[in-house]
Length: 324
Image (cartoon, helix red, strand yellow):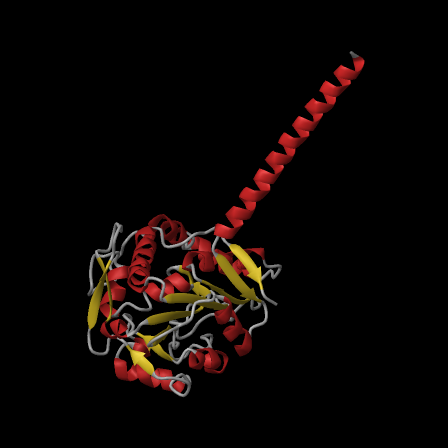
């Protein structure tokens, strides 16, 4: 009887252990599956032209056909924009054309001739063709599921491209809190009228208006969705987090950066990419980060990502893959 009792105890212990192991394995499997399903954000700490090419290759999505490389050529007077020497190898590897649209605030990029001159003065025309996409007009991309915009008004020439490389300089922004991938494909690809349409939350193509801050941020996300829907899988996103001023490259007199450079990040998910950039700012040990964080939070900048995720264009959960 004693032996039988001991046998039952052992059997029960074995069963409990098996069940416990099963639960542990199940949890591990779910965690592994969850990790596999998360968008990957690749990261190099060292910023150089070689790593810029390597991080593009790590994405595993080849830029084919006629390739648009969307970046900011920088407002004259500013100096924080991505330098041609840094991006040259990547742009030429994809045989890309640098694309921009005219600004909606005047300045020295408000018309095509002045804009091309700025691109030349800043060294971009020496490394690749430059196309001011709304030089000959504009077209509309439909916005589905939005609250503010019915369409995103973009440069007409954007329809000439088969693939888009979104090459962003991550930094602060006076109105949006920060500028990254979503801002680059929303306001950046929009024509002058399209920029006003976004800034006014769909109210006007002739005036910036005075919308609620969240309405403006949501309009940026909606415009980005229109571009993403248009491109399908023919788009990828790379951001360089350097010269981390609280101000945008559209500012002719931006504040000097008060924190050090972070690195190069890339993803096939623009929401994950922008979130990773902001996360790395927040987790930095550099005390100077407080200024950029204040700029982001004072403009409610993270709401752009909340709404973009709601629209279904990306995830704020991601897996960071360090390549250094």
